[in-house]
Image (tube, rainbow, N blue to C red; front, side, top):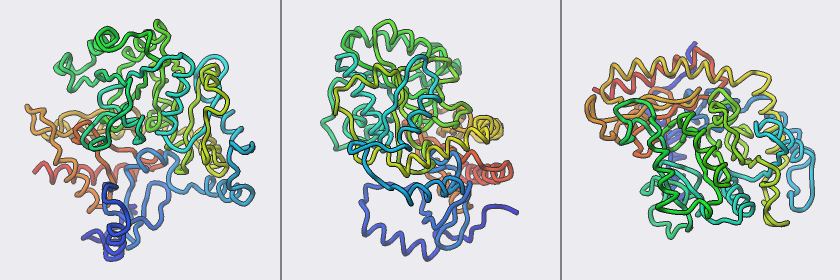
Length: 444
C-alpha cells in the first residue's frame, strides 16, 4: 500500500486556518518551504492536521537520520525527563552529558586525546570552534568559502555566503573573515568543461594567503566537506588532503562543519572520512540528537582545552534530555548500520537522477555523496544560467502530490533530497516517482 495519502487541493481547511494564525503570530521573515502543517510523523512519513500523509524528503533538513519519532528515542526522552530535565552544565554535572562526550570522543576519527563541548545549535557550535581555534593559536583570522553556510548568528553569518537571502540588512559583519572559492566543478571557471575538479581552486587558496592575509595571522580554516546550503557539493578528496597539508604547514586549525553531512548521511559517520583526512575540530548538530536541539564540537584535546576557564558555557547546551536522545540515536545508527543504508539510498537516488539529467534539459547537474543528493536546475541543455524558478515550482508540485522537499544552492536553483535513513525501498521509489512527475510538469 502506498505511504502517500493526500486529497488535493492542498493545504486542507484545518491547515489553512493554522497557517492564517501563523501569519498573524510569527515573523514574516521566517521562511517555510511548503504549507504542510504537521500533526504527527513516524519513520519517513508526516501526517498533517487534515489527515493527509506525505513522504518526507527533507528529514528536518538532515536532522532525522533515524527517522521521525523512533520508539526507542521517544522512550529515552520520556525516561530521562522523568528524572532530570535540566540542571545546566555550568551549575553542575550529570551523567548523560559526560556519557555523550565520551561517545563522541570515541566516534570522531582523530588521532590522540580528544575532548568535546556541547551546545544547542550548529551555529553556536561553529562559534565555539572559532573561539577554541583563536585561543589555541593566538591569531584572529578565519578562512571560509564561497557558497558556505555555517549559521545565522552574527559571526556565523559573517562566515556564510549567499548574501541576499541570509545577510541582507544585517551588517556590519565580523572582521578578519577571508573567503576563497570552493571546489564547485560544475561552475568553476577553471574546470567547468572537464566535469571534475582540477584543483586550480587550491591555487586560489594559496594565492589568498599572499594577497589577502598572511598565514601567520590565520587561526582556522573552516570547510564543509559537502556544502549543504551551497548545493550539496562534495569537495574532491584530493582537495581536502591538500587543505590538510596546508594547515599543517602553517599551524592553522582545520575545522570541518559536519552539521548537515554528519551521522551516517553520506555513508560514513562524518563526510570527511571519505577523504582520509583528520581535522582538528569537528562541528556536529542536526541528526546528533534525532530532532532534539543539541550540537557538539569534538577535537584535539589541547585545542578544545585552550580557552580560559569560564570562556565556554551554555545555559541549555548538553541538556540531559537531548543527551539521552543522542545516545539512543547513535546506538540505533550503529546497530542498524545506517552508513550502509545511506550508501544504498544514494545509489538508488543517483540512478534516477542521472537518467533524469539526460531526459530533462532543465537539469544541469546531479550530484551528492551517499544519501545527500541534489539536482541543479538551469535554463536549458546549452545554457547553464541558474533557473531559480524551477525549484520553487518543483517543490510546490511535489507537495500537491505528497512529497516534502526543500531547495538548495548558492543561486537557490537546486532541490535537495535528505530522506530519513530508515525509509524503505518502496517509500523511496514512491517519493522519487512523485519527484520525477513534478519535474516533468515543470519542464513542460
